[in-house]
Amino acid sequence: MTVIDISPSVMQFLLAFIVVGPLLGAVAALLPAPPGLKGRNPDQAVLRHGVTVTGAVLIAAIVLAVGFDHDHPATMQATTDISWIPALDVRIHLGIDGISLPLLVLTALLTFLCALYSYFKPPAGPSPKAFVALVLVLESGTLATFAVLDLLLFFLAFEMVLIPMYFLINRWGGDQRQAAAWKFILYTLLGSVVMLLGLLLVGLKSGTFDMVALATDNGRGLTTSVQVIAVLAIGIGLAVKTPMWPLHSWLPDAHTAAPTVGSVLLAGVLLKMGTYGFVRILLPAAPDGMRTFAPYLAAFAVVGIVYGSLACLALARTGAKGDLKRLIAYSSVGHMGFVLLGIATMTPTGVNGALFANIAHGLITGLLFFLVGAVKDRYGTADLDTLAGATGAALYGRAPRLGALLAFAAVGSLGLPGLAGFWGEMLTLFGAYSPAEGLSRPAFRTFMAIGAFGTLLTAAYMLIVVRRVCMGEHTLPARTTPATTPTPSAASAPDAPQAPATPGPPQTPDTTPALATTPAPAASPTPGTLQAPTTPGTLQAPPAPQLADVQPYEAAAWTPLVALTVLAGLWPAVLLGLTDPAVQKLLSGGKS
Image 1: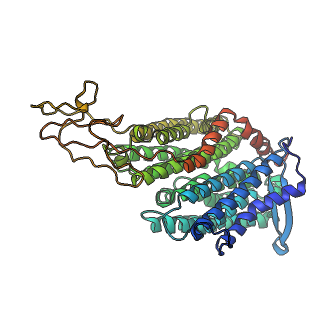
Image 2: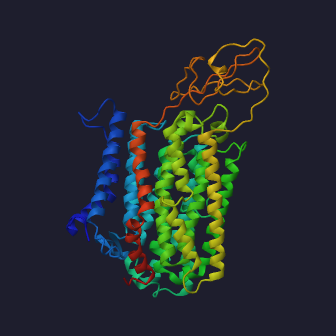
């Protein structure tokens, strides 16, 4: 069934445009703006160009999804197969099925939302011209990774995203950005070198680099020893990008230093490239090798789940000086652990859960990084102790819509039933309960129990974050000095809360531009704020200044992510109906 009947040639053109269009847009972004399109200034013109190109790519991706034959999602559609390097039998082979289509649309959507957000709030740093060009190159490489069906083209697309992300962190990032950018590029490049050797081994030993042919052959052209070596080599490169514990240490630094848009793209789409490689290449092309390493992959996955959660709990505790962006980065280590656990089960249930968790993580964690970036813009810091302190957030009272969105994203991340995060984790645990033939059932049930414990830890740290950032710290009132001369004031009304009159540094309002720094008159306290009594010897603390709440451009960038998180949670069949037939075909050796 197709919503709109689109001819195969048009589908081919759409997929080619989705892959190549951002690259052409990146070249155009570096050229001078034509007369009449410069807008108010060149910076505004190039940012508008980024919105236009990413918007066109998103429209093409939506049309491609509408024209996709949903009755046959296991069949490669919109295919292009052109000989490129005949001597090595390398072909420009593009195509999509039910596995790659959701990731393609997710990438186009997140990149467009990032471009839209940047148009209204450009990142601090060098000229936006280079920023827009790098984002478009990054989009092209990511989309190509999900669309190509040749091992060498997959490697080229996989590597294409490294340089743009390096410069986005290094030029537009925050503190420690240079060290974080170097750590990112070194880890991923070293992993990619090992992965290339594995890809060459598979291609040369099997006689083809075509991923469809390799999946159909289902490892019959490769000996078990070759499969084991290939899975080890390719798996290391993919595990670095995923990231899998203990190859994850580049991720928290990169997220902490990256600009908001860089963090959204890194979490939302770049991490998915690693897990996609496991499903698209290793599961169908080297099943015996995967079966050998599956228990170890599952063990590393559940260690990552627990480790990421414990790291988040440590960062969330009072006095730890934890960075909220860093905490969300560590949460990604745990969430991607669930994806790897689902892949390690080698069952349709587990792999479908992994693919669902991939999409859910992209939506929810992308939204979380948008929100954390907005909080940091308003306060000038993402330090949890500062945000939750006496002069800190309490977002429910100072920016209620922003606080409500942060709480929504947090409960989505912890896997609340009815939201997208729930189904991926549940299906993954079901898959671990009954793994594929030849895998140890007791071992995987142990992994399932550890993963389930990790969900409890996830709920713990996310609820702590919501309590501290959205509600503020709860402090016990101290004894106050009796007033010798009562003074009539609004603060002395019977129903008015009394602030402690004991020592402590005077509170001062935040001076960032987003704050309303003019305190309210003493006779009319702002609702939800505390006002100190005017007794002799007591310092009067001004009421906490209000924050700028969600702006229209922020609502435009975040609403699609909220809506899709709810839609995927309430109607999971939309996604599972695409992935399940394709997964069944991959795991059965190319048979539908």
